[in-house]
Every structure is written in structure tokens, then in C-alpha cells.
Image 1 (cartoon, rainbow, N blue to C red):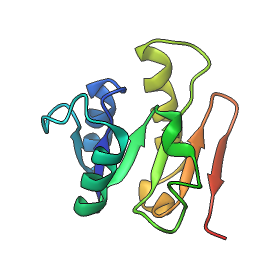
Image 2: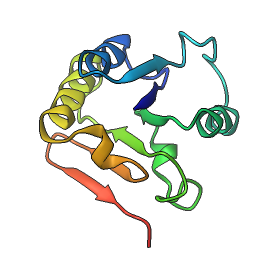
Image 3: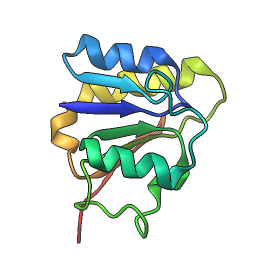
Length: 119
């Protein structure tokens, strides 16, 4: 499965995904750091990649409706810093295979993992 890790996440998130066998690349590695969301989203769509991000804008189902893309995982920690983001990614990988989240909007917080499906 092909995954793109947004620039707002540490590179170790991509490494965790790679360790699970995913084809995971970062926005930074691809030279897309600083891109506006609409331009980045076009590339994500063209590449048919699942997006892992902490940018809550990608959680807006009006613009990114489930079932219309390869999937979005939104990490929403309670604290700032790298450690809370890594812990959330580990939590998701402990409970789910990313393939099960394809085409969906998944929001991971320290308290829960919520999944939005298409209507």
C-alpha cells in the first residue's frame, strides 16, 4: 500500500510504516515541503496514496469526503511534540492494518480512533 506522510509529522512516522511493509514516503523527501494543501492533495490523488497528517484541515469531510480518495489518517494528540505523534501512530498500527482504513477518514486521538465512512 502506498502512503504519503505530511510534513507536519516526524520522519519516524514514515519509518514505522515502512517497518510494517508499507511503501511510505514523506512530503519533505519528495521536495514538497511548504506546499499549500490543495496542491499537495492533487499530488496525493494522482499518486493514489493514503495520507497521514496532523493537519486538521484534511479532516474536513466537505472537502475530503470519505470514499472519494485513498484515505486519510489524521493524528490529533493532546500535547505538542514528536513523542505524542509517534505514540498515536503506534496506537493505530497496533489496532489496525492501514489497508482496513483505505478510502476512509480516520481520526486518532489518545482516547479513541474514530472512522468516518462514505454516506
